[in-house]
Each structure stands twice: as structure tokens, then as C-alpha cells.
Length: 301
Image (cartoon, rainbow, N blue to C red):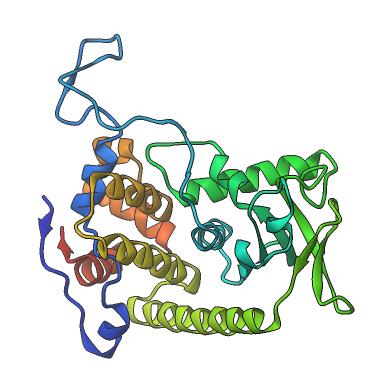
């Protein structure tokens, strides 16, 4: 039996943790359960649902994805903090070339290089998921990139039509595409502002992760994942109550973090679930049950 309580944050660390992980295990179970026929039943073996099904997987795109959201999700799927937007699409020369799409330039921390990306290209990438989300978009982009590298295209797609590595030339004060040869202007003022903002955000992120790591006795990597998830929840809740789609996205993230699957929830005991989740999170089952769940999630089991 899961007893939902209001969020309980204690001490100075409570200020750091405010608005972090405002989704309960109840929401997790509900959202994961939606992947099957929640509240309905099967016809006896055909696989068809009677009474309606929850959301199902399908091929999706993110037609409204922004450069910032894309890069934030790259950081999330890469497990890094350093990627950021260097130039937005209205700041690049290539955007204004006749027949060209909107291009932005990022620092790709995962590959330690600058990269130009077409905004229209990432918005057209198809990924397989329940709902539209930039995390799956970023994951699919990395998969496409890995295929290109395996095919020998180390600096983007073959012609640089969709994305490409770019190099900074101090003599022209611009970025230049390795494949396409296009110029992408570098504006010092914009670059400095972006760098300062990125460094400030990184410092705040690490401060929060360190506080969570210390307070709840988890390793820094897990703490970083918790804070990243918390920021995602905070952004969702700033628009109002969590929707069913929000809960499904969060349940996927929580499942990755805890290692707990739908079949685990249906087939295993509470003790087995706690043991599995605690190993994935990197703490003891007792700490998970007695500290993390009640104090971070507001849940007693």
C-alpha cells in the first residue's frame, strides 16, 4: 500500500531541493501502467483491448523543438553538462543564404567540438515513443550521428546538409563548416553572454547535485540525474498540473533511473522492488524507503 503525503523538505538543503521531484511513486505506477490497458481487460489472448487502451508507441516528430530544448536534452541523454547554444539561427550567416534552412551552432561537449545544426532537420527527425519529447529526439539524433560515423562520415552527414562539425577561424572571427564550407558568424558579445550563462547554470547544477548527494547519501552521478529530472518536472509544473503525457514521459525517466519496469511492479514484492531500485540508484533499500521516498517524493510505503 502506497500512502501519498505532501512533499516534506527539511533544513537548509530543503531550499536547494524545493520544487525538485514533485512527482510521486503513485504517478510513476499510474503512468507506467498506462503503457498497457489500464482499467480494461484483454479478450483472452488476441492482444486486443476491451474498454480502451492507454497511449501506445508510434513514430513522432517534434515540430516545435527549439535549439535550447534540443541542447538541454543532449546534455540529459549524454550525461554531460557542457553542451550549449553558441549561435542561434538568427545569428548565423548560413540562415540568410538563399535556399538554406535555419542553422544554429552549438558547443557539443560529448564530442568536444563545435557543430552547426539545421533547426528544420531536428524538427523532422522521427523517433519511436509515446509522446513528443526532445529527450527521445536527442537520443535519435545521437543514433543517426553514430550511424554516420560508422559509415565514415566523421564530421556530420556527407554534404553537411543537415548537421556538420564547424571550426573557428580567429582571422575571420567566424565558424566554418568542414563539409559544406559555409560560414557561420561568431559574435563575441553573444558568445560571451552564452558562455557566462552556461558556466553559471553549470555551477548552480553542481551545487544542487552536491547537496542532494550529501543529504540523501547517493553518489554524485545519481544526484545529477535526480536534479535533472527535478528541473524537468519543475518546467512541466510551471505550465499547470502534470498531464497524463507528462506522467508518461516522467515514468520513462524514473524507470531508467530506478531500473524498475512495469513487469516488476506487477510481479515482484515491495521488498524486491526496493532492492532492485536501491541497487540502481546506488544506495541501501533502507535509505531509499526511509529517506529518499518520504523526504524527496513525499511517500511512505
